[in-house]
Image (cartoon, rainbow, N blue to C red; front, top):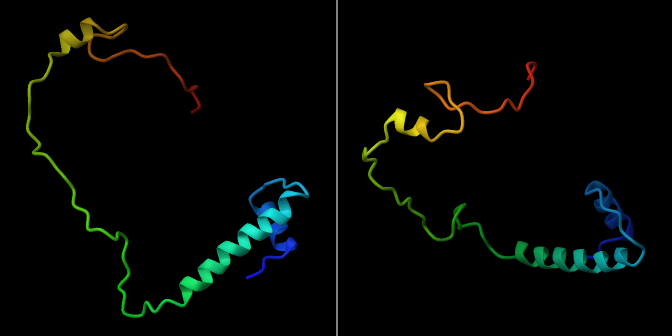
Length: 98
């Protein structure tokens, strides 16, 4: 499939790319080659192939959710740069309106 200069310019505009005069023919050739390969793939009979999101079956590897040792609040707050006795204090990053 031959991509025209106008099509390359249109795609570049949609992608907000500024192409030079030497890049336009290069991308014409590249896009034409890509679309030619896509056309070839369209010829492959896939009517009996079910839709697939993964070629290789995937399984989640999960670990048991086990409660472990926890730290005491006072120990954590003791090493905090700033706190109010209950929570960490951090600098405000958003204004009052946000």
